[in-house]
Image: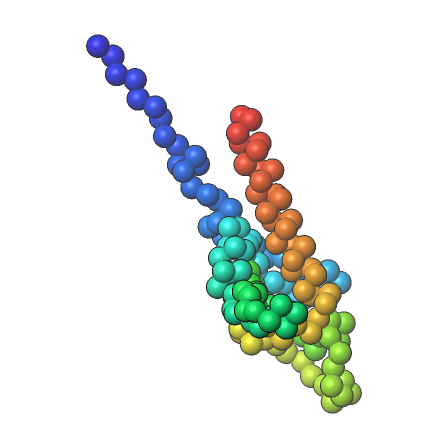
Length: 153
């Protein structure tokens, strides 16, 4: 009597898109600014659920559930932007409107990465926000294509 066992492979069990290690990506046009980015994976719905709140709909005079964009952005930033290095005042001049930029002329050194800095840059730099969103989609697309190639082999 022969017992056939089906081989189970780890690659068939693990969702690599969820736990993929972060990837360091250079910001276009900067010689120093690099961002350590993690793919969004299956977290988007989780963030939407966590960012929901009850709001009053004046048109229907009833309460409704809405997604708080500030809370969603906070959760998104905390997960997707792991860290950065090399962000300088010169980079910021290209990314955001600066209050009295002459005051920062000649300032050197890097601007550190923390949750508040991530949120500020995402809120006040449409270019950085769009780039981060595009990078996360590109990582997702790359992962899906890689998984499809593995399935074909």
